[in-house]
Length: 340
Image 1 (tube, rainbow, N blue to C red):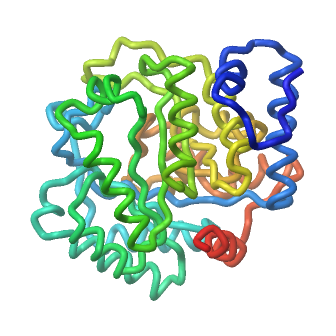
Image 2: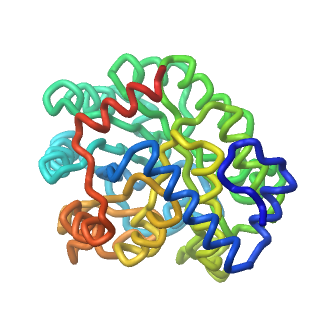
Image 3: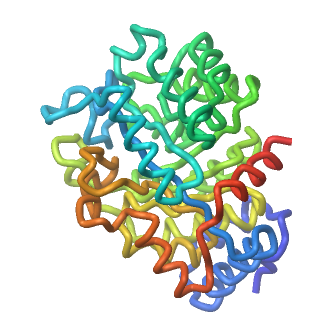
C-alpha cells in the first residue's frame, strides 16, 4: 500500500492514485485527507456566500452556459442589490463574500469602479473578507481591486494542458490568464486556482495541474466536475464519475495541508456536500440566498429557491458529521496566516 500521510509524492505516485479503483486504497486516501484536515483546523468548516452579479460575458468558453454567443436571458445586478444580498449572506453566517462575474464589457469600460466600491463597503461596513472573480483584467484594474481591499483573486485555468485550454477557452491566451493571477498575488491578494474535471484531460494532466497549483502559490485550490450546459458546444458531453473529483480533492489535501479546498454546492447541490467534505474539503462554496434572483454557474438554479444552498441547510449536515461552520473571526485568522 502506498504511504499517503506525507507530502513528498512523485508525479508517478500521484498518477497511480488517480488511476486506482482499489477500494482499500481509496478508503485510506479519504481517511488520510480527513485526518490532515482535522490536524490543521479541528472540526471547523468555512462557508462562502456566492454573489454572481452579472451574467454578461465577452468570452465564448465551450463549456459555459453564459458564453457570449449563447442566446439566453441574462442579468446585471446593481450595487444596491449586490450589497443587500451580501448583507443577507453575512447575517446568515458566511465567512466570505465571493463576488463572481462574467467578463462583462460594461464593467471593463468603467474600469471596475462599481466593483471596487462594493468591495470597500463589504469590507468597511460589514467587516467581511471578499473574494473577487472578475476573469482576466488589466494590471491597473487589479491594482484598484487590491486597493479596495479584496482578499482573494480567483481565476481558473481549468486545465494546465495548453492544447486542452485552447479547446475550452476559445480565443483566450493561457499566459495572459496565468499572469493576471500571478500579478494579483504580487499585489498582496491570495489567489485561487481551479481545474475542471471531465473535459478531456487524462491523469497526467490532472497531476500537472495539482503540482502547478503549488508552484504558483495558490492558497485556495478547487476542482469541479464538468456539467453539460444547454446551448454550448459541449452540451452533449457526459458529466464525469464523481469519484474523479473526490480523488482530486483528497490529493489536494495531502499535497497542500493548509490549503482552502472547496466543496461546491454548484455541481450536485446540497446532496453532494457530505462526500466532498469526507474527501478532505474544508469549506463550502456557492451558498446562495433563496428567491434572491442570483444564479449559480454549473447548475444555475439547483437547490437555490428551495433553500438548499443556505448556511442553515449545510449546518444540519455538518452537525451530523461532528463538524461545524466556522465563525467569521476564525476564518479571518486562517487567511491571515495563509498570507504570511
